[in-house]
Amino acid sequence: MSTYILGIESSCDDTSAAVFKDEEILSNRIANQDVHKSYGGVVPELASRAHQQNIIPVVDQALKDAGVKASDINAVAFTRGPGLMGSLLVGTSFAKGFALANNIPLVEVNHLHAHVLAHFIKEPDGDNDHPEFPFLCLLVSGGNSQIVLVKNYAEMEVVGQTIDDAAGEAFDKCAKVMGLPYPGGPLIDKQAKEGDENAFQFAKPRIKDYDYSFSGLKTSFLYFLRDQIKFNPDFIEENKADLCASLQKTIVDILLAKLEKAAKDLKINQVALAGGVSANSGLREGLLNLAKKRKWKTFIPKFAYTTDNAAMIAVTGYYKYKSGEFANHEDAPFSRVVF
Ligand code: KG4
Image 1 (cartoon, rainbow, N blue to C red):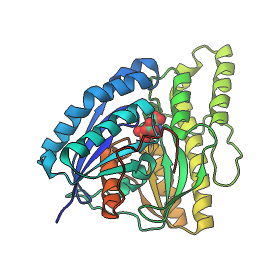
Image 2 (cartoon, protein in one colour; image 1 turned 90 degrees about the vertical axis):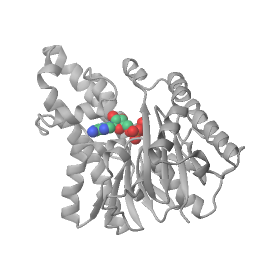
Image 3 (cartoon, rainbow, N blue to C red; image 1 turned 45 degrees about the horizontal axis):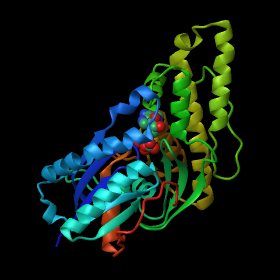
Image 4 (cartoon, rainbow, N blue to C red; image 1 turned 60 degrees about the horizontal axis):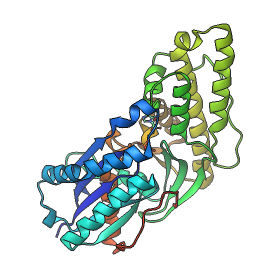
């Protein structure tokens, strides 16, 4: 008999609900929050208010899209953390209420595990190729930059991670310095396509093992621009595409150098990308080139599953449901990273 899972995601600024029939996606609805654009970043208080407004219509629409009723759902999976506490509380409270009202089990999901397991979402007409265990996953988003050794659906080990800013944060903060709106990552990616990636050189960090650091790059980028503007106030406007291309190349080189080292040392030849920054075209191209050189098999998620979405929560919830891992109604969300 099939299992129907409702997934709920509300960890940051996207309210999302998805319905799955076993590992197969039936629907995935996302309500983005435009309210943060004018602030240059996500405002936690506004995010939780918007989740509270969006959650019922989003779930309602996801159920309708899937052609199922609330009473058909066998379990509800929700993001327990990490994320913004006020945002997590909305999804967590909704999931608990839904589980109680329908007398079904509740499954808690770690948002970071879900990003990794997004590779296992099955689509009715997709090729549904997915990595075999063990594999390495480069998880890069606005809040995280990690190299994860994925041993199975439940066991994941962080072998390297950022000691300060995340890669997405580096993109967004450098974009802000150039006067681009939030989130600047996709805008840098777009501009980079028109520029010369070797036009400018920025310092790369020397960090131990497989760890990352991006705060030094952000500072050197800021100081470089400040010095140039002294001589030419229009420097940024005149060189925007080259600046974007050179910055993107630096971030991608930093990310891939550690990934290459980890894969070599751990003797892994299946490598996946996950998280919002995996939409970056320079990173995708760089990974494919490296894969050719290293004879890796690579997995790059569909764009819709790279950013925050409930489909990845539902598929992770499905595996936990199958192994009987249920949450308690007393379980509180957690805001900090607990892998
Ligand atoms: O996983 P995600 O949706 O959620 C958060 O961690 O909040 O990732 C969002 C991050 C942002 O920093 C955004 O600038 C970055 O992913 N991002 C990109 C691209 N698309 C999204 N960065 C570089 N190039 C892109 N194409």
